[in-house]
Image (cartoon, rainbow, N blue to C red; front, side, top):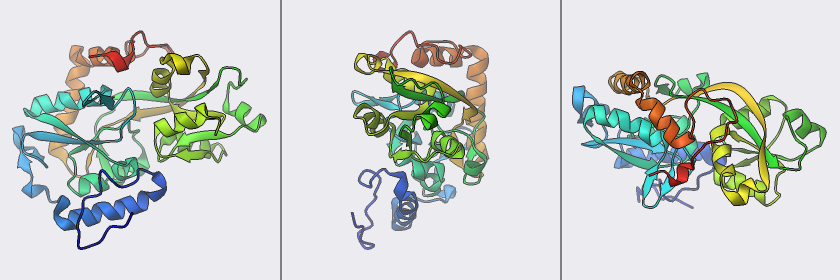
Amino acid sequence: MHHKEEACVAPWSTFPRSAAIGATTLAVVLVASACGGGSSDTSTASPAAGGVKLVKAGKITTCTNIPYEPFEFNQGDKVVGFDVDIVDLAAKKLGVTQDIVDIDFAAIKSGAAMNAGKCDVAAAGMTITDERKQNIDFSVPYFDATQSLMAKKDSGVTSLDDVKAKNLKLGAQASTTGLDYVKGKGFNPVEYADSPKELLALQTGQVDVIVQDLPVVQTWLKKPEIGAKFAQVASLNTGEQYGIGMKKGNTALAQVINDAITTAKADGTYNAIYKKWFGTEPGAPAGAAPSASPSTTP
């Protein structure tokens, strides 16, 4: 797709969501900003409670990458999920509602979306890393994550060593820490733009094994047609934690987000949200199966 400079068309809903075009996505984001699609100057933003400035009056705008069940996904005409409920805690403190923008993950982790004034926060099951801290600020951690391997039940795979020994084809989601982790172990996986494409590749035999966040794999396996043929075959304890991303220097908003998360963890609200989406209390053994399907939770 070509974008003419004089047209100044915002690309968010039409630009291909692929990490392979991350640099191009960044360029388009910046062009959109220059065309008036958003401004990185928060002095023109709308104030909320406590003097926090937001890109839209009465809204906290969240950039995410859908679907990434159970963190964010479509349920009917609404976007729901664990991340949505976490940001809603901050929205309540600010006295506003949440508006969600679905964009390429590369534009989220690079900070381009927030710099261009497209959103106030990024909530996309995003791991806190030193590399990403160079581009965005993070909230306090709100989720302890781990990676896992998923394969056919009869694959005989129990570790990454097995993947290598059996010369199996590995798949991963682009722009993710799971991808970085297996690359660091010497693998050169096939990259897919989002998690549904990665899962489809496994189902259709394009790859033999995939690496993905454990809660996402657990949610997939609750679907009968998937659980009948596939399994979580290994956990990769990478010590990851998720954080809510914000534009660098946005300390007023960071304080509200951090207070919301800290308060929720102290008063039991966080545990209730966690159990709603994962079916277990925080700290349950890795690999424990959720007791209720997030996709059917009101």
